[in-house]
Length: 581
Image (tube, rainbow, N blue to C red; front, side, top):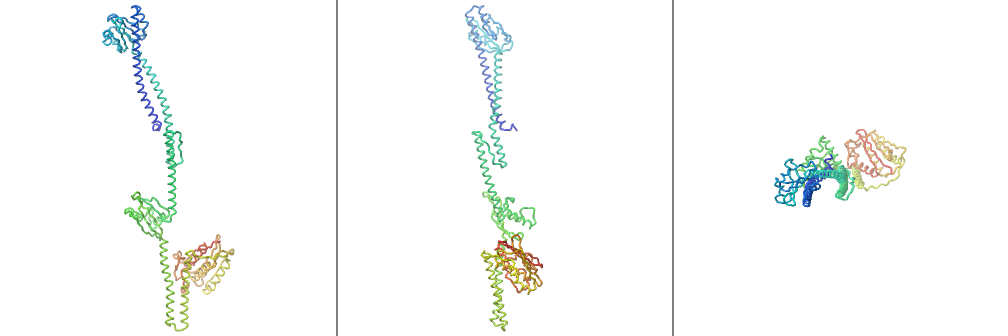
């Protein structure tokens, strides 16, 4: 609204101040002019009285009165007392001048001082008959026996004062009008930069920090505009830095592998990153709680940290995975204002610990069996329990086989350790796929025939040459085919198929054996992992549990991948993907 604006307030202030000053000045001027006109009229009347005095002193009586009538002003009248009983009055030329009874001059104590004290007077008095005020001056006559009175109506002075008052009021009105125009001009000129700064401040509040206020003057308003522009630049700089830091913090939190949750005292989530959201989704799904963002158990942990103001760490198992939750109080100037929790997935570490323990147990178990057998059969030979030469030869053959098995286990452990350490060496060559697959197939064809198993190969005719390490890939295929033959029963089928898929060589080893249970599929490439031993075709053929782990490392060393698909009772398929060089 206009009356609430700065322009209106400045204009009203200036107008009130000017009107107040003009009122005081008008009152003083009117008082001054009124006194001035009264004094001027008295001086004029006194001059006329002195002129009458001069005429009476230098002329005869008849000439005196006629001369006095000619000298007096038309607005004044003259009354001459020769003594207290004889007098003469001038002729009245203006009807508004009221007649005065001569006896009033003698009877009035203030007027008759001329008779009594022979001194001039200047009085403003009221005529009894008309209640009209007149200005009277009086001086003694030349012979000191009478008095000369000259008087004039006060209305003449009042009329002059009224004209002066109208002129002063007109001038004051013009001054107020001019002041209004000047006040609007001045206030508009002063407030125009302020209005621009107000608009700029509104844009700043909306987040637009590129608005600049023009500097039109170099006074206080100009300095204010310069300060505003500096403030805008500083705000823009600080907001940009804050946004940059916020974006950087958000990027860091999003890229963190660990989950981060920050809550306030009311346990309202203030900050959370994607891993923490994934953890809460899994946790809520497991406990079937979809109403609250934070599960009840986490809320209790956070409440304990807030109450005790101490760090706390706990481990939670969610969906089969182990999470360590480390909670720390969040301080704001020695006052706890919330809790920050770091959620770390420790499943791999726990699994590595378990694998390490299992590895020691498996190695001990795998070595203990052949050592025990070697020790037992060697004792039988030493104690001469075997009587015939054939018995001794059979015991010696068992000891030999077990030593070979133990040596193979140690060699595979060494190979696997070198592969995991990244020390595997590949001698890549350009290999004819057809010749390579057929050579491996011939190696197992006799074994398959003995076991009454159908052994097939299929090679895509479009395949020709591919670059890889033939010895290492043969080691992989040998292990896969050997496993397929060992887990396939009589009249079963084993097939090797070589095709291409999007610039990759794909080799599938498929069997119609017993298959691998679903719960064992994720672990078949781990060291020493063996599925149900009842699946093997002959219980006497035992593996070390390291072949598939070694195969996986060899394929990955070729920048390839190996997968397994299996259904219990239907068979298993291992697929090797080798990219072209």
